[in-house]
Image 1: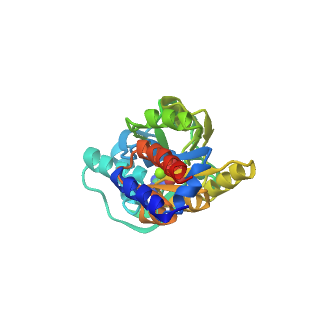
Image 2: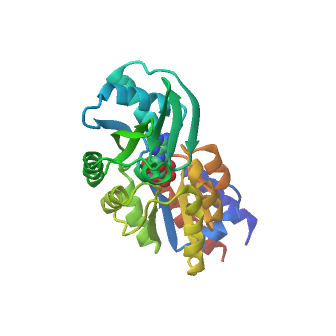
Image 3: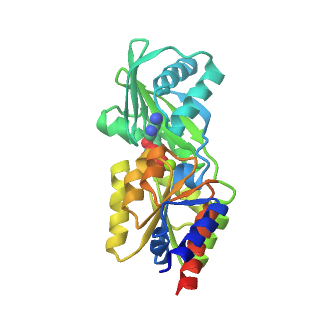
Amino acid sequence: ATPTALLVGTGRGAQLGILIKGPQILESTRRVDTIVLDKTGTVTTGRMTLVAAVPVTGGDEQLLLHLAGAAETGSEHPIAQAIVSGARERAGELPPSESFASTDGLGVQALVAGRVVLVGRPRWLTEQWTIPLPSELQAALAAFETQGRTAVAVAWDGQARGILAVSDVVKDTSAAAIAEFRRLGLQPVLLTGDNETVAAFVASEVGISDVRAGVLPAEKAQIIRELQSEGRVVAMVGDGVNDAVALATADLGIAMGTGTDVAIEASDLTLVRSDLIAAADAIRLSRRTLSTIK
Ligand code: ADP
Ligand code: MG
């Protein structure tokens, strides 16, 4: 390969809004046949908003919002940001919280007004903390999920207290980009820590049939390795801290420009506009650049 032609490629990449770590990267994009897409912040905007707060029967919505909102102030997760700002809007100033701890991809805990508050994946509460979800909250949860909303459970002092639902929207360019990946011969896979119902909802909106949902941050890289062991050459697009290891494991790691620094660090390419169309452009560009060299 002539370095000059490759550098032309990387210069053109910059014009298209793609930052390439080095010209050698173009080589690996040529053989890619599978593209794994993180859901939140990659296929969707990741700018979530709180759409509902459902307290358990006899519970107080204001208290639910105050305690959950306060517990989430320590987290940078898009769900946490939606809960904090939504709680402030609906319930006013939040009480202070202390002893914050978060478990990646599962939820948070904090001490608020003398109570140990947990907010997170419903299964994390029921399985790890052995806090049962009353049937009315299970019903609320299922209803939100079938509408494509991510719902988290709230508990304090060992009892489930309510459900909070957040909504996210698919980026308006995602469906077109995924159609373009298919035209380029790439099989799209949706990968998310979110639950299956919500993941299936988003997948059907953008035209993806291969969905891997409920995946813990540590398992994301494992999914990439499994695909590679099937003989596939895998590109992964992501934005979060929880995507970093998977991005580094993929044959081609692509980070969203709006993503976290760790995701960008772990990747080969960065999409300045955080638009999946640019990922398709990058793959087309690298193939064209390489065929010019040959
Ligand atoms: P994704 O792969 O879509 O970026 P994550 O792995 O970050 O999702 O999170 C997976 C799930 O863990 C969320 O859908 C939510 O149920 C739970 N979760 C993670 N962080 C938080 C948080 N700060 N507050 C509440 N729930 C959380
Ligand atoms: Mg994400």
